[in-house]
Length: 134
Ligand code: HEC
Image (tube, rainbow, N blue to C red):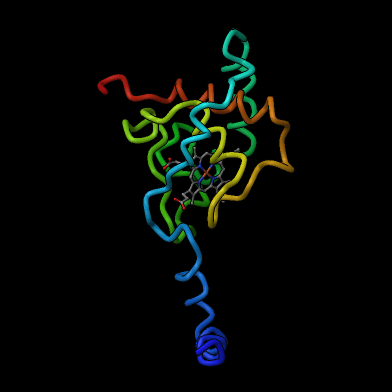
């Protein structure tokens, strides 16, 4: 069985992607992420700091307004959710921070890329992308 799977993967490399986690299943952070203590809860500059990060590292896929329409979005196999949508905005800062920290599939882990504080800051910034009507 393992042997057959290896052969299949050799013949169809695209299959490996299908077998990886993150191929369109809803992405849920573990419950403990909700309990993480937000170090920037009282930092009035958090949104501003997060904006700098988003507009340098994240917009290429997520788009400037977070709708998932960045220049690299077309090449993605999994389309990221609209970051201003209710489904994302209903998540806690801790859950969003956890996703940015760990990544999934085509969304890289940012743990080694930006500091812990920067990851919290960008979670704060995502709040400002919330759609007014929701
Ligand atoms: C290479 C393209 C790419 C870049 C760059 C990128 N993302 Fe993502 N992002 C994705 C994809 C694809 C998903 C959907 C992943 C999945 O569901 O498996 C995603 C999902 C997310 C989610 C989860 C949304 C949900 O459904 O709950 C958040 C939050 C997020 N990204 C934030 C960020 C932030 C913040 C940055 C910059 C630090 C960033 N992303 C950079 C591609 C990217």
